Image 1 (cartoon, rainbow, N blue to C red):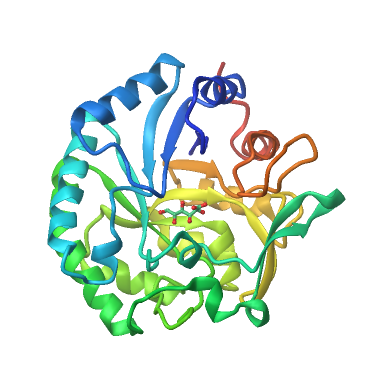
Image 2 (cartoon, rainbow, N blue to C red):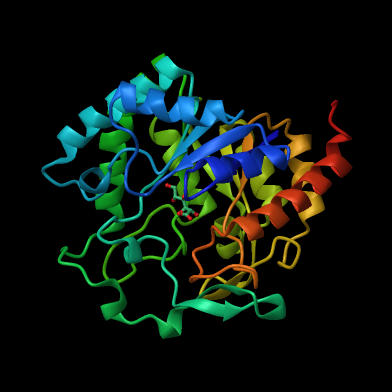
Length: 322
Ligand SMILES: O=C(O)[C@@H](O)[C@@H](O)[C@H](O)[C@H](O)CO
């Protein structure tokens, strides 16, 4: 298992910071799409490599909104999706983390009711409380959707994309819905339980059809993390390292050392299943040294969480050879 670093703002300073923390691999993260031509993706890879890191994971991926809701533009988007997977294959980028949340607005994807909940020492973090969610928080013009429509849309997508991913040796890592609750404002969200992930994996039973073990989301589901990791084993293609406190309908995100799960046990479980993929730090609280509003991607918080993760990994795997 290796740490891959993420920086919402892809610039040389952040890349250099990750390198200084001892990170060797990088996650390109954008919910607005990814470089769409081979040349653009190759230039992004060069920028990252010039700072001494490898481009290992694409997160977010190509536009998927039409695919998710089964709309008339979905074949065009699938065509673009296939091309992007081919580009990744050509450039040796082996992991694609994506999600199937209705992408009607960013507010309809990772849904929170507060972005200013106070964690330890007043560090800002996010909170979701079902009772606080109002319809107008997720304004959209879509017709209500059902679970079975969403499953049909996933199947339509996977049947066309998985064969290409197999050929290109690109691992597809479906990220859970966050929060894993459905429907939210009349839109169904199916990636919300261990059983539903089993169904996802069986729709096209290929080794490349896998998941992102987002610790935060599976914890939000109320799932036991070590058992869940053992359950999915080799179909885990990517890991998000974070934690929460609370229940599916009332939780807040925590520092990774301040949540409800035993992180040493969790990291030991990845060793037990011989997980060989990447793990990245996910949402972190906003610290006093930072300005702006909370978005989970402050570099100070990431620096703390990477250090903590490195310590856990050293305890479990031993000191890496220098
Ligand atoms: O901060 C985030 O956006 C992530 O926690 C996920 O929502 C994840 O990146 C996406 O779902 C991947 O497509």
